[in-house]
Structures are given as structure tokens and as C-alpha cells.
Image 1 (cartoon, rainbow, N blue to C red):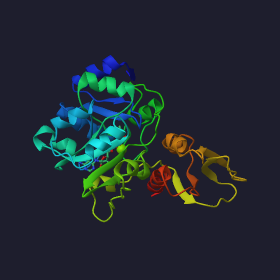
Image 2: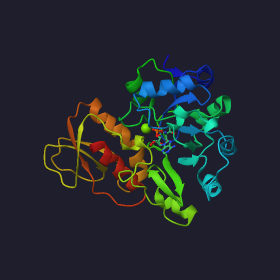
Image 3: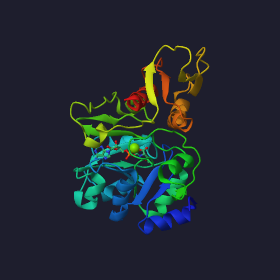
Image 4: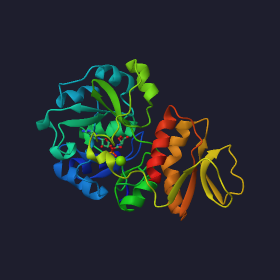
Length: 306
Ligand code: TXA
Ligand code: MG
């Protein structure tokens, strides 16, 4: 089957099947929120632990009112500024309105309104969709049809949206007196801060996990990754266009150091390329800024190297 049309995707979803669909961040493994068996199938397909909840993808901001009336301060401001887009908000919800499996039994649920035109059109047809990233649990998220087929097989139904524009997952936030980030993503703290009037802090999952799922290994290729700032001859390097890595065995460029959005878009594809090319060990250039989108890139590389 592999590549399917939007009409076919909608039909399969309404029939309780799981299909892969593009979003502006990464590809998602989609099920209809109203098809509990399809939601179960997502966990099985990804080999995802059952205590890692899923994001509900809405078709319009108003749809949130079907799931919760307890909207925290500045919710509307954030939704106006970043929806549709790469912001996921974790909210207290009416538990009877959302299957427990989607929330991993928590009294909260995560919501996002994707901006990709194909995703929007699909959700208009099907109603809200739950979608984790389309990758086997622990691997880098899929950002192209090729990635999805690698993890789920050439016959798996995929709606082709080309290469994802952002390349990294949405930023996940929750309100705890103030808004705080529980997963860094392709919206930076600074971007959120401009709207909130304060810089949201990163909740420390190691001290007290917001949900157990965030503790698992993530974003990792099979290649052994070493984070470094200096490079010896004969090594495989993951680096930046415009920098020189003399006498390296091979360089995998992530993009220009002046362009973190480009680096983000390429990041998971390059990590997967290491495995495709049979690289056993690679040295990653970590001499990068410590602000804005670089904070997300640093965090993903750190976790990929764990
Ligand atoms: O960009 C994205 O967010 C992509 C695309 C497909 O939309 N989706 C995605 O989903 O990355 P997933 O399942 O790979 O990551 C969802 C994250 C996880 O870190 C999960 O722990 C967190 O959201 N999450 C979901 N519901 C939560 C909740 N009720 N409380 C805390 N964290 C939650
Ligand atoms: Mg994921």
C-alpha cells in the first residue's frame, strides 16, 4: 500500500486503522480519537511504553472546549500566537471525554493544532487525531516517508507530505503557577517569552517526572555518538557547513551554524543517515550557542548520545 491519498487516509482512520501522516514538525502515527482499538495499535506498533501519553491534534482552537473548560491563564494568548503551529499544551481535562489510554491514565491531556495544510484537511474530515511521532520508540522521529517506511515497513500506509518543514517535535508546555516547558521543541523559550512576558523555565524531569514517558531513551540512532568540541584525525564527524574538520574520515553536515532552523530540519535525517551508512561511531560538534533553538538541538543531541 505505502503511499495513500488524503481520501484513503481519512477512510482508513474512520475505519479504525493507523496511518502515518505528515505534520510541519515530524510525521505522526495517527489514529482517530474515537477509535480506542486504533489507539492501542499505536502503542503496539511503536513498541511504546503504556505510561507515555499521546498528543490530541485538533482541527480548530474551539475544539478544545469539547475536552476541558479549565483553561489556564494566558491559554488564549498562547493559542492565538502559536496555533496552528508547534506548541503542545498539557491541560487538565474532563476524563470522561478522553480515553484513559490516550492520557496514560493521567488527569491531564496534551493538545496541539498542527499547521500543515494536509494535516488540517485530514482532521477536518476525521475529527481529532492522536499522533505520536512516527518512529519506533527510542529512535529519532520520522521526518520523511523513507524514515517511516524504514521503521514500519514499505507496505505501511503513509500520506506523503515531503520532508517536514521543522524537523523536530513541538514544544510541550504546562501551567503550574506559571507556564513551564516539559519538552523542548521547535519553539524556543524566547519565542514563548515574547508572548507570556516572562521566560518559561524547563521543568526538571529528573527531579520529579511530569509523566514517566519522558524518562525513556529517545532520539537515538544505533551509531555510538560522542559529544565533543575538538576533533582528531580519522573520525566521522557530525558538524556544520562552513566549519572545517581537517583529516576527518567523513563529515555529515547538519546545516549552517548561522541557521539553527536548518540544523533542526536536518538533524534526525542525519542521525538516521549514520545508521544507513553503517557508521559505528560519530563525533558531534557541540561548539554551538546556548540560547534559542540551539537549546533544543543540544538537548536532542545529548539524549541521542546517552
Ligand atoms: O510535534 C509533535 O509533537 C509530534 C507531531 C506528530 O505532532 N508528536 C509527538 O508526539 O512528538 P510524541 O508522542 O512523540 O510526544 C508527545 C510528548 C511526550 O513527551 C509525552 O510524554 C508528552 O508529549 N505528553 C503527552 N501527554 C502528556 C500529559 N498529559 N502530561 C505530560 N506530558 C504529556
Ligand atoms: Mg516521539
